[in-house]
Length: 285
Image (tube, rainbow, N blue to C red; front, side, top):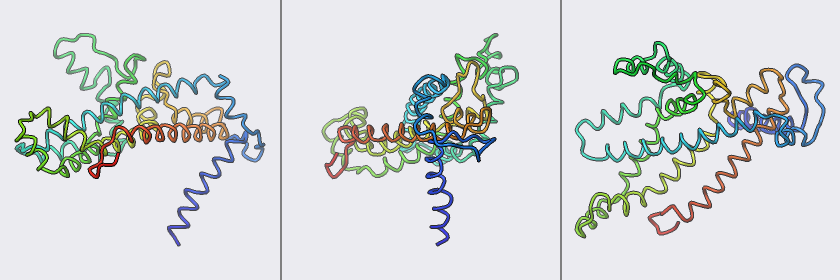
């Protein structure tokens, strides 16, 4: 009963309430004066009344594409290396995994200092090796978004562990049979490892995409909306609309439900593609 009550109060009620608010003009300053406006909040985004809506969506999609790609590449590459008989591999696994356990806010603050253009470690090192004018990272519209991608990719250790679990589940007899047939490492990687890992890759890509589309901490803590709104992410724009001027909870709720729809559509596309790209050991795809 306590679990059911908690689920109803803290999950079901907020979801239903936000759906209702998305059809009203409710503001944080005058919640009692809210009136029903139908689809007006949704139409306002597509009519161009809020140009920051499309900019934040573009920034978020760009962040998600780069973040998911780099995270999967780093996690898979590290897992392949640590799956071999490397001396001290358990120590390296721990080192790579620890960053994913750090609180997101703490990591963001740490990287904000690391990429400080004046006294940060990165630019100090670049000046030491002879680069007199290093990038200003978070203070330039050209580099701010990519800098946040670097910060987010830092915690790839969780996905690496999942890949390691998948690699350990692949039968050794498949590799032994391939070696008897004269297969090279790259042939085994392409014909055995990657196909057998495809369900794990699919899972990591799906969960990574869902998480990246909800990116908030990096933008909120490190750069805000960034120079020229270059790091204004969708959820950050949603937060600003609800809890900063103009305090429009109704429009913010509509933004939340639009994001839910976008994530649902992308998830559906992923599952459609998985029927052709994901291989399962029982022969189903």
